[in-house]
Image (tube, rainbow, N blue to C red):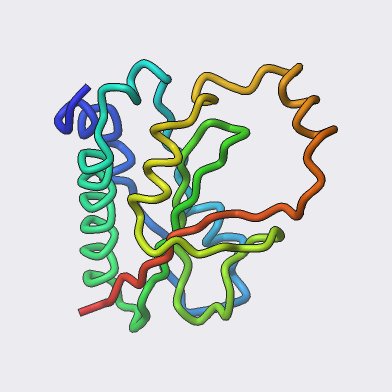
Length: 158
């Protein structure tokens, strides 16, 4: 799988429409409308570089910025990216910049660039799922605060 295969695999995500608002009381609609999950099998991930996956995300952000620029709203959007290890998915969402924080219930640790999150995703042993036996073992032996590593970037309306 190379960059072009990624584009073909996720062409619908690249072109998907977003919901834009300046309101902060429509957070649930923003989350439901602007959240995408991308999955690869462990085998597929072995053929994709961090650079190629970052280029895919850059295409997606370019599309979202174009939609923002063509909208009637005078607002910037917060693009945020995280790896959901339990689901074996890299996820991203967009909310308007008027929100004071990202909508996570867990503690958030910010990554300085998206390649950190992408590497965690591509190198995960759990892209095909976490075996129940291992999940049970992790739940019993790990006693720590739930922390979500997130990359955040502002998409600016021009």
